[in-house]
Amino acid sequence: MIHATSLLLRAATRREFLLRHSSGLVCAAALLVGGCGGGGGEGLIKVGEFASLTGKESAFGESSHNGTVLAVDELNTAGGVLGKKFKLLTEDTQSKAGESQTVVNKLVSRDGVVAVLGEVASGRSLEAAPVCQGAGVPMISPSSTNPDVTKTGDYIFRVCFIDPFQGTVMANFATKTLKARRVALFTDAKSDYSKGLAKYFKQQYLKNGGEIVVELDFNGGDADFKAQLTTIKGATPDAVFVPGYYTDVALICIQARQLGLPVPFFGGDGWESDKLIELGKEAVEGHYFSTHYHPDVASAKSKAFVAAYKARYGAAPDAMAALGYDSMMVLADGIRRAGSTEGSKLKTALAATKGFDGVTGATTIDAERNASKAAVILQVEKGKFRYLETINP
Ligand code: PHE
Figure 1 (tube, rainbow, N blue to C red):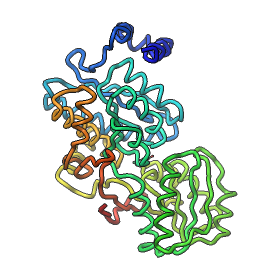
Figure 2 (figure 1 turned 45 degrees about the vertical axis):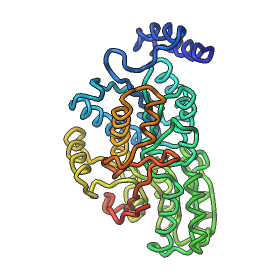
Figure 3 (figure 1 turned 90 degrees about the vertical axis):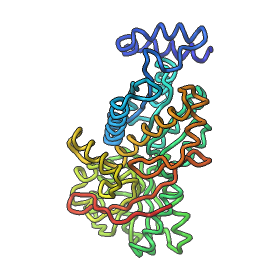
Figure 4 (figure 1 turned 90 degrees about the horizontal axis):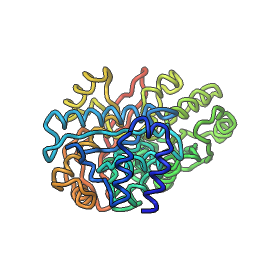
């Protein structure tokens, strides 16, 4: 209770708290006498979302948010669940380390949400997961792939594959498709996602008999990668694996071209954003990455989703949009089966999710609260992401 009180006092000092949530003080008082929670006030089911709506990875947050909003609207149009409609409360993490705990604390303690959706980036999901676990509020990450996210505890779920799988997929791709015998690794030392994916890639690539000729780091947000790229060039790799996020990857590819490093670059889902092409232009042409979804891979669910998404947002959805949508649908299905929004009942229902038919395929939550799903490999071609192949788990 001391904990909850101090959180609320901290929240209460924030200007936007008073501006946007004048009823929050009532909730604060209720919490002091035993909790306002439930999230079902005003006949609505409150769902929290935290996403990078601004900052370096804003394209991730925007896509994921768009997909989530589409799902909420479709669910509400169909009458909601348990006779109640959903209300989505969204907080911006600004793509920054250190924000996620604060905003998820707000959602959980002040707003009394029944569940939390987010984040895209693994590092930010790792920050927030202990808050949800501690509060007994289920959290579903749409697209964080680092295995440690769900290891936080039994309230933490995801609806996507994890990086031991993604790393293996890309190592096999390097060996079999690129026929690369010598690979350079270039990792974002500031990103849990990047470090994990590099590790799992390396494990499988060495098993395949490949050689890692050089391993170097960068810091996400850096502007100049030329020193490391010069060393990489000197090591004469057949290909360069960069498990980074699109903003850094685009710059790295541009500077690699400037230095005359004409080998394929490849990476994971963090590459996926139209911004990669907007920023990287011809420097990203021909390069490859793995991700969760491509709109050309047509299931009935996916076709309907693509049409609705295009109609609403005027653009085709990417993996984050599809996973954001699926995370909300899986949550609604869990609430329906639980017959309740109470945290412990909801987490038990979510853990029992089996073959839920979504846009990104069937979601079955395993014993580690992860979803095992296929990966797709895409190539940048003429300013578009071309679908190459699907790799099943
Ligand atoms: N998987 C990435 C992470 O865990 C985030 C991401 C998901 C990026 C989907 C792009 C597409 O950090």
